[in-house]
Amino acid sequence: MSEIKKINLNDSLYPVLLKEISDPPKVLYYSGQFPTADLFPLAVVGSRQSDEYGEAVITKIFTPDILEKIVIVSGLAIGIDAAAHQIAKHTIAVLGTGLDEASFYPKSNWSLCQKIIKNGGLVISEHPIGTIAKAEHFPKRNRIIAGLSRTTLVVQAKIRSGALITARLALENGRDVLAVPSSILSDLSQGPHLLISQGAAPISSSDDLRTVLGL
Image (tube, rainbow, N blue to C red; front, side, top):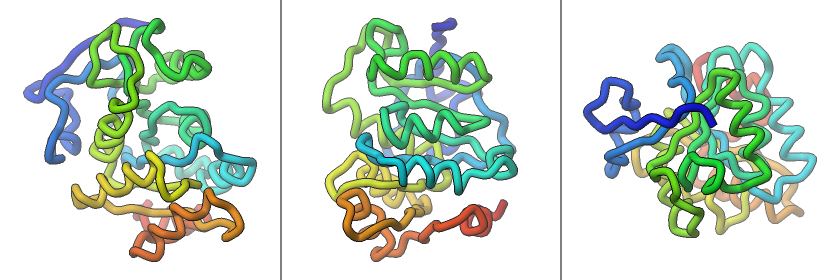
């Protein structure tokens, strides 16, 4: 891991969108580079049990021209999060642990974490070095993902999932939510279809995404 730095709410680097949520973290630990203000911050979240469909959706929707204009914000979990970070040209990974290797979770994504930093992305956490993974950290982490983003896109998620927590937090803070529809035979379609029934814009193509985001 490269150098780990710290900022607080009064620092000029502190993300403006994150300051707007009801309970922004007072301190952020980070490694890497903050994205430029001209990029559209889009949270991309979904199931850790994603399948070939979910990963194909990521590849289909995020065309090179879109990736040039957005910064993908996600949680560096296995599944949809990792697929989104991997395809991104600009990305922010939000952890639920400390940023040091000993604390990092999930261990299988440590190399992806290092790749993000090497390629000019950003890895952040509200937790200091040495903070190991605990179940209660991840719902709190999700508020940061939603808070950093103008819009949240859900790709494959069960009804009870961290992705739907992120979507709810986004809505509570006045942000837009999008969802990708899929087979009604899959449990992983239940979350996106519920969000769509509640008013989330369905995203079935890169054209849909361009239109909704105004790119």
